[in-house]
Image 1 (cartoon, rainbow, N blue to C red):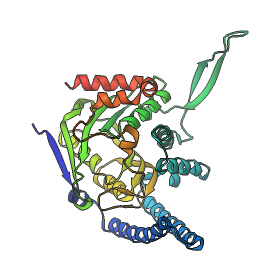
Image 2 (image 1 turned 90 degrees about the vertical axis):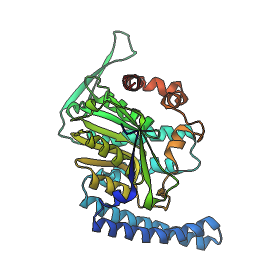
Image 3 (image 1 turned 30 degrees about the vertical axis):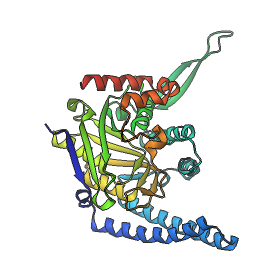
Image 4 (image 1 turned 90 degrees about the horizontal axis):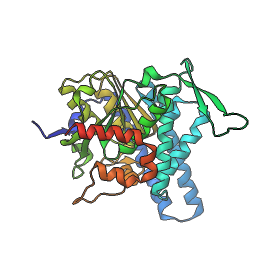
Length: 356
C-alpha cells in the first residue's frame, strides 16, 4: 500500500486554458508595475513622490480587480465575496482582510478575524437565497419574571444543503477554519447536525519553486474512512489557496479510490487567481468561495500581496525536528477555542480513533 501520493506542478498547469494563461500573464505584468511603486513607498523620500507612488498602486489594484471580476464572470464556479454580494457588505470584507494582512495583527486578533471571515463565507455559500424556507428558533432566555421568557427567531431552512456534508481537513492550517465551518453548519441545522471529519496530512515541498512544486499527501498520518466520503458534499476550508495543488492532490487520490463526491466546496480567506482556476478546471462539480482574490504568486508559490503563512499565524510555528501532531495542535488552541468547538472535537476524536 502506498504511504505517499505526490502531485507535480506541471500536472496542475495542464488544466489551465490558453485564455487562463493570457489573463495570468496580464496580471503578472500589472503586478510587476505595482512592485516598482512598493519599493518607492518602502524607501521613503519626498511626500510628493510617496503620494504619486501610492496613487499608482491604487490605480493598478483597481485595474487588477476589474480584470479579476471579468474573469470570475466568465468562470462562475469562482465566487469572490465582493463580486457576488451586495455592495453594502464589501466594506466589511475589506476591513477583515486588511486586519488579517496587517503585520501588526497578533495571534488572538488573527484567530478572531479568521472566524469572522469564515462566518461571512458560510453566509455567501448557504444563506444568500431569499427563496429558502424559514426555520424558527424558540430560545429560552435568562429572564424569569413574571414568567419564564422565550424568544422566537427566523433563520433560513438550509438543512437540504448542509446535512450531507463531510468536513475534509488539510492539516494543519485548515484545522481551525474547518471547525469554524462545521460549527456554522451545526448552528444552522434544525437537527444540530455535526459534520463528520476526514483528516488529510498534506504539505508542499518548499525546497521547490512554483514552476516545479510538489504536493505530498502523507497517507500514514491521515485519518479518514473512504466509505464516509462517497456521494457526499465535501467541504474543504483552507485559509490560503495559492496554487490549488493540495486540494487537487487529495481529491484526485479519492477519485482513484472510487470515491465520487456529490459536490466539492473550497472555502478560502484569500485565493490566488491561478490557484482558483486550477482547482475549478481540474475538478468536476467544484466551487471555490473566497473572501478575497489576489492576483499573482511569487517564484516560491506564495500569494502576493498575501498575508504570510496563515498556518503559522493561526497555530504558531512548528520546528522541523518536533512538529506537533493534531492532539498537540488542538491543545495549544486553549480552553476558549476547544470549549466553543467541543462537538467538532468529538467528531475529530472519533475519526482519529476509528482510523487506527
